[in-house]
Length: 193
Image (cartoon, rainbow, N blue to C red; front, top):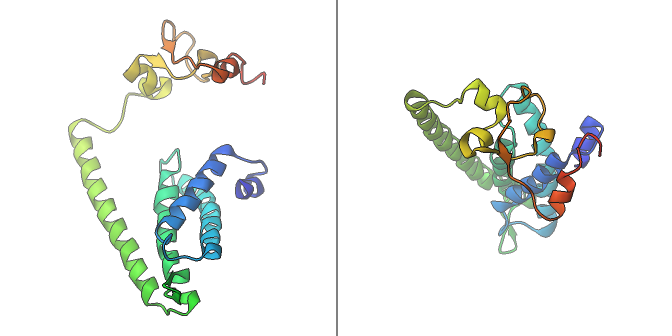
């Protein structure tokens, strides 16, 4: 959240949540081989890295609206490499900055490269197969109105919250009504709040 605040002039809830996830993903590879200060450092770096990564992917026009590639791919790779930088095992340093040399870092880099190559090429093959058979895209109407309407027969949000839709396009379409506190919050127009 602080990184987004500094970069964009305001706190951003989605970056705060992705930052928390990025820290958790970042420390996953080294959770058994990291000191407490090393863990905090890896998580903090991942939290900053996820913001820069999301901005980068947006700039090169990679469609990742929730930042999953940044959180899991980039910060997962960072966390894997961090074992080669700060890792410890049974009290002895295995990471470069803990006196273990570069061997563990090289091993971790090979692992990152292998995981990337496998996931990239297998995913590419699957997506090309889907594109050639049933297609990857929905119609422009479905894209604009939302798949919740076309796939489930109801809008996930009250019509007053949905912008940029043709007038009357949701006539007769129900929405998934919230309950409890969410019901009270949903009765307020967000532009008035």
